[in-house]
Length: 98
Image 1 (cartoon, rainbow, N blue to C red):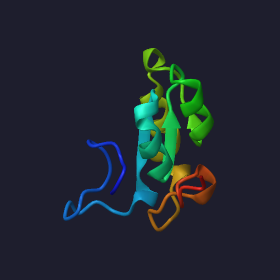
Image 2: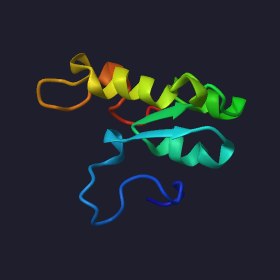
Image 3: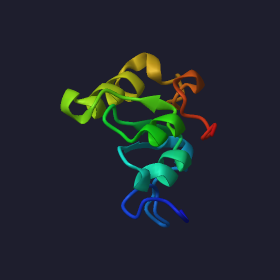
Image 4: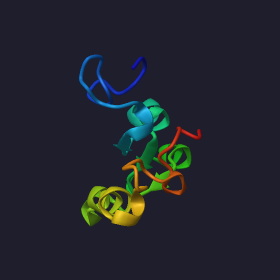
């Protein structure tokens, strides 16, 4: 994925799905492209204000277990997935919507 954070996202040949099925978490401007490319871009509560504006979701801060909160509400809860196993669109996963 061109322009994405160097440690994030699907890699060619990795077997990962398309970016519409990814969640990216960030807290600073170096994470902006990754947040925009992901199916669900999440800024942490302690993130830079510009990143919060670009993200689809603002999670609680890292000190408040924000990553765990988003994973619980968007992935682990059974109402977050359709019967086919695909994330529900109202959860903000299908397409970047940016």
